[in-house]
Length: 412
Image (cartoon, rainbow, N blue to C red; front, side):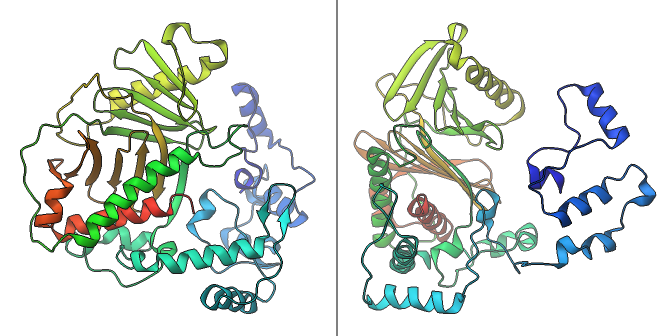
């Protein structure tokens, strides 16, 4: 409770011996910003004498939990974003927004915040609601959301049941994300237009395929020579550093929480650093500029960890094509069901947690290929044009639909 409210443990110090002393003596600080009921509850739970500490029943009956507003439920976005509660006349507010979105009611004069030409919050929410309604035609194809308890016990037989119609916002439960250049001073935390173009192209191709492919009981089989790269291993350490991954050519990349990207090439000697899209600095791993030393250390740690502890996610051969541009991650996004990764050359990969299946879309020789890696880590690669003619199984189609919904919702 102390850590959740203050962002650090109560007895944390820079010296281990001092930390143990603080624990023994129950020595800690409570900032004045904490509400009095929180201070009282924390102090009682951290009492030096165990006999003075409250029981679980006493804790949940404490004023901290019983007084004031307590929501019945919270969205999964609370894992990375502070919840926004609208307590004043919620029904009136909702119907006002719904009416404006559906029937285009009278609009008030546009309001702007500061000097950034940002729409007023009310107008912004109406716009989002309108966009959600437009997306409903796609979102009804996605999987039904499940509670954590249900997802743990679901069997393979009902994983691919046809979902009910529902809004994408309810279907894709976003947990955490990262974006190249997302917090650099020059980008002002706005997405680069080139990045948006890459995502739009992939979404258009995927959507066009889904809308026109016929039904089929099997997956197409083609004998193709592939040269694209894909993510074989990944690790999410975004609570502290960022998101790390290893490509099929053994390049290791990290998209840091500050929006910067760093790659360690397969020779383990060369580092590529991207502060923003297309802005690359190259230096030797052993001669990193002083301002990059800590990030290079993290990059090497990620590389060692994945090499020693993680297994490859599929059987695709490792191919090094010197003619292809260096791959680096533009954006990653995690939902409660899958991980999405979008790269600078348009390579798009989605990993599904429950059965370890994967979908990879890549452009090779000006032709889009789709690779499906099944539960046994066996891969099948075919042209999207082949899929358009012969169709694909429901398993594949369901995953493609979920992948598209993740891609469409990546900026929402």
